[in-house]
Length: 315
Image (cartoon, rainbow, N blue to C red; front, side, top):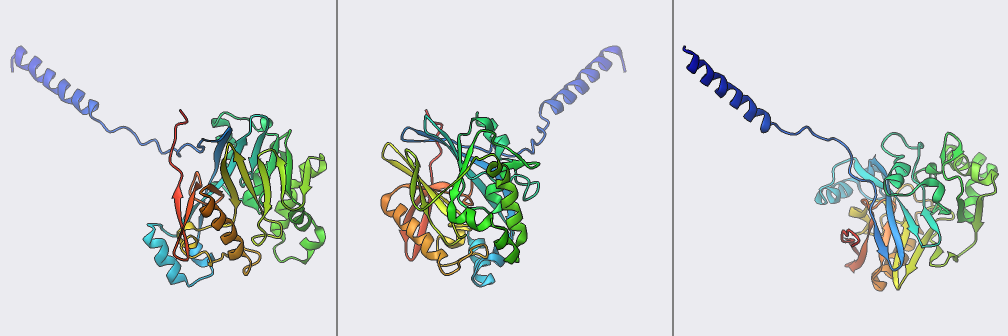
């Protein structure tokens, strides 16, 4: 092979190597999707925050035949266990920054506890939160209040229905309960705020700040409360745990879940709120609806159809 042939061969090899490098596949990012969304509600800014997801064997938790639940979930293209969102809602009224629920924090393992990181990514800091409204004291709603026994939100006042706090913060109730861990979790989460005088219970249905009204929806827990947010004629009803498995319970709202404290009252509480939202044409925001967990309802047969809110870039 002469010199010219050698140079030609070297050039061809280099070209092939360069072409291969140029067309190589990009490495997979393998990172989660952004954990916040944003929408305007009248003059209020609503920022749904994801605390992460948790896999639940919902077919074993729902109060209906396992085969029927599994078939319904399969039709919705859901695999078991179902990856279930844990959402919270940050409401900026212009004068107050209000957080509704706080996620699980470290109470439920590594797939949850992402709320603070997502809050920061959304442009807010924990010390900016003025008040926190808790729907109920289950760990996936209050665990995010603390980190290593210290308050995560150093300036916030935490508020909840007095029926809820009287129940879960009672040592006598804990001593009588078979589920002592839930009581211990609630007391650990609220403890720093109670000690600092930054926990304030309320009674009944009451406006907590202009535009946000607490409404009791008792059944899931003794003092379970929802929060109706209203501005400029628009409404968002943050419903806490009135629903857990939309694929099943929207179609058949009579189906309860083991987490419901009052199995008989739970369907009625759900229907009351859902009927009002469907009739009024306003949004609901659910802790366990697929993130960002906001949408509209319309009645369909004996149940409801859930219509997720349209994505917006807030131009």
